Length: 119
Image (tube, rainbow, N blue to C red; front, side, top):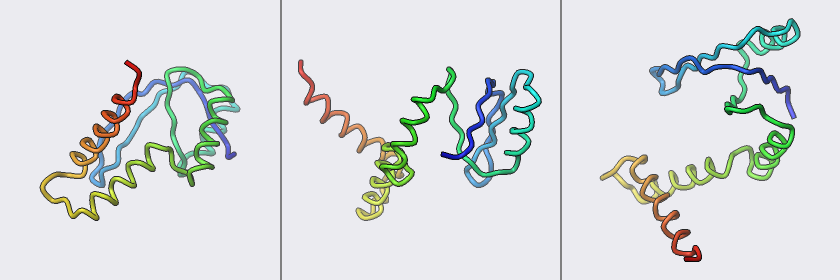
């Protein structure tokens, strides 16, 4: 597992970029000298960002790592979205956007699961 940097923070703003990405701004409380050093070492590095309203525990991180290892680095929802995109392309859908197609397909999965529930 790579280095993990965790500090309490407030998500202060999100703005869109031309390429479809977003800029995310966080403000932390006062940091120790060690945490500041780690933060500066991460500056301009590519990585992954998780944000949760409560502190991450070791078990949370182990569970995420296990999922990523088993699925080639993607979460189950990322895998589903990627497969649905391939289906969307193969069907040559052009009457609806991929986002609409995705929403329809996920709704079908939800409906199938609901029908399987004990009532």
